[in-house]
Length: 257
Image (cartoon, rainbow, N blue to C red; front, top):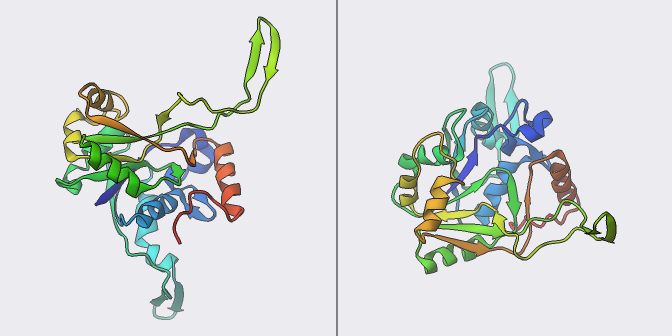
């Protein structure tokens, strides 16, 4: 099974970090977000990846072109340019396809452009800027049991601000950040059948709009509820949160060994 990672957006809300690199290449703990996400899938046995690149696709290509050397020790003969890499067991058995899906292409369009790479098999898909401790094997079982074309992971985001109770202008309650049980949102981590690509009209199509809405209208979309950790990296504050969790040694999304 393949995992698609959408990695072509501009990441404008992280402008300082994304001026020279795409958001999925922003580092947490010295490793790109892509690396963290790929480890999630690899822990579930999914080790073939199709990365839908766009903005600064060259940065992603360069990273994987040099991945073997970057994750090993180098011995260099400077007079001849000879280079020997000693990996010492630090390499990973992944197959990675980096596909340039266009600079301005929207999320649905990027997915549609991968048709020839995906074939006729079920595949997984997520965004290149969100981490979770989701049980991907359980997600896949859920998808297969329900027999629909698409499954989305539904999550409840951490509220960013405290809750105020108001009676007119009077504050009756000043609460901590809360969750609301009915406030599920799209958490990425989809399981999809190849037929979903037929629901995407072209490059300008947002996956989260017409295709998903049509799938829902035709009863072809199911939601897998994930109650555990889930955190996007949309802002500098969220990046700092992920950095602090990684630095603590207890990052919730680090489910691999």
